[in-house]
Length: 634
Image (tube, rainbow, N blue to C red; front, side, top):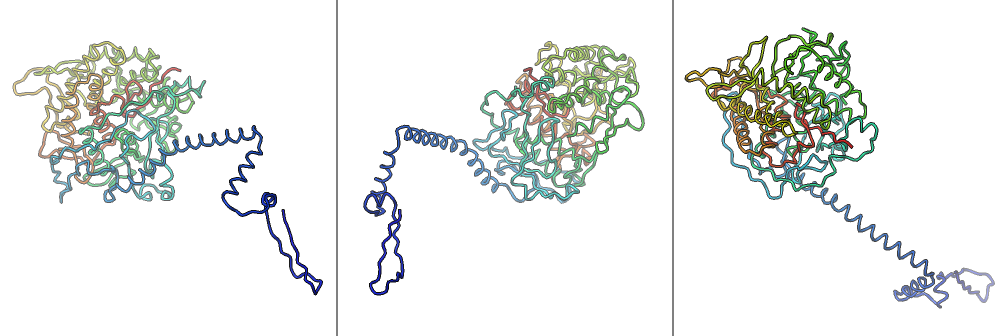
C-alpha cells in the first residue's frame, strides 16, 4: 500500500515535488515496519497460523518428501563423484615417458630389460625380482560392466593421424567419449583412436529364438550377486608384465597393422585390419588393462552347396575360393558357428545362425567319414568331401571337433545331433589315431592316411585335452577326462623334452624303444615355435576342472621359456626358427596376433584361482579364445 504526504508552499500555489514512502501492508497495519528479525519471525508465524490445517499438512508432507529425495540423490551421486575424483588423481600417476599400457602404480612391476646396443644379439632375459602386489588391488570376478580393478588404468596414447588415413577429431572428444567393445561378434566400436575402453557383455543370454519372440526378457547371466574377487597373484602379474611388454612393441612399431615384426621394428599385413589390436581387446579386459562385420561375411555362403568360400573381401562384399582350388578346409567352414549363432542372438536376425546351422547339418549327412573322423577338405561346388582317406586333428580339421562340443554347450545342451557327432568322433580318435610312444609311453594323437598310421602330431592338436576336459565337466563319461589327463602330459613333454623348453610346430613320436632316443623327435622343417596357445589353453581347462597345481607349474615353466628365448628387449615377442638351439634360437621377426589374443590370456587365466574369472558354466570360448555367453532358456 502506498501512503503519500504532500507539503504545499505558503507563497506560490505551485507544487515543486512529491514525497512518497513505500510500506508493506503488514507494516501499515502494525503501525510501522522496522525490518527487525523479531518482527519478521512474528510476521511469518502470523501467516502460518492463518493457513488452514489441510494447507499446513500438505506443506509439511511436501517438505518431508523433498528432504527424502535429497538424501537419496546425495547417496546415489556420492560414488560417481568419488570415482571421478579418484580417476582424476589416478591419471596423474600414469608414467608420461612410456607410451602404451600403464598401471596406476608402475613400481609394482619390474621394468623390462633395457635394449642392448645391438638387438640382433638377442640376449636372454635376466632374472627379475618377484613383484609385490599392493594391498587392496583386486581382479575381476565376472564378465561385468564395472571396471575389474580399482587402481588399474589403460592408457593408449597415440597419434591418430598415423593410424588412420582419414582425419579424426579425437582430441576434443577424448575425455568425454568411450569406445564400447562388446565381447564376441556384437561390435567393435572404434578400433583405432580409443581410450579407456570398456568391454560390456550383452544384457541377455537367451537363445535367438527366444530373443526374437520375447526381446524384453531380463538377463539370465548377469543377475546373480557379486562375489568377493580373488586377489591377483605373482604369476598373473608376470603375465601382465609380459603383455605390456608385447603390447609396447606392437604400439611402437606396428600400431594399426596386423602383426608386429619385433626385430626389424616394423610390421606385416595379412588383411590390413589391425588383427593384433582386435585379438587383444578382451585379453586387456581380462587382465584388467581396460582399454558390424556380419553382413560383410555373408557373401561367403553364396555357393552352389551353401558351404562357404574360404576367402571374403569385406571391403567389396565378395567371396571366392583359393586361386589354386575350389575347396575349403573343413576347419574353415565349421568353426564360424559359435560367432554367427551369437551374432543372431545379439541382432535378433536369425539369418546368420541359419547359414551356419545349414553347413553343420550338411556335414552331418556327408559320406566319407571314418567313425566320426572327417577328411580335411570340402568342395564348395559339390558340397562333398575331397582328399578322402586322410584324417587328422591338426591343421585344416581341428576346430571342427572343438565346435561340435562347444555349439552344444552354447545352445544350452539341447542340440543332440551335435553331441552325437562329437562323441562319435572321439571314439574314432580312440580307435584310429591313439598310440603310445617309447620310452615313456606317452599317449599321443597321430594321423591316418589311406589306412597308414603316422606318428606325427601338430602342436595344434594340444587343444584336445582341454576340449575333452570341458566335455567331461559338462556330463560326458569319465574316460574323456582320463584321456585328457594323458594327452596334456604328452603336450607338456613336447616342451620339456626340447632344449629350449619350447615346443616345435610338429613332433614325431618314437613307436619303438631306441637307446639314447627320447619320445619326441623333431625334423628340421618342424622345429619352429610360433608362440601358439593350444597347450596353455588345455592347461587352463585342466587346472580349472581338477585344481591340480602341477598344471599351473607347467604353464609357469613355459612362460619363463618364452621370456628367455622369444622376448625382444625393445618390445614384443618373436617366433623362433629353432627350438633345439638355446644359444641361437634364430628369431623369425614376427609376433603372431594370437600371442596377445590367446596365449597370454590363457596364461593369466591359468594362474588365477578365481573360478568366476570367465566362469566356464556361463561362458564358452571360441577357437580364438574370445568368451561368448552360454544361452540359458527363459
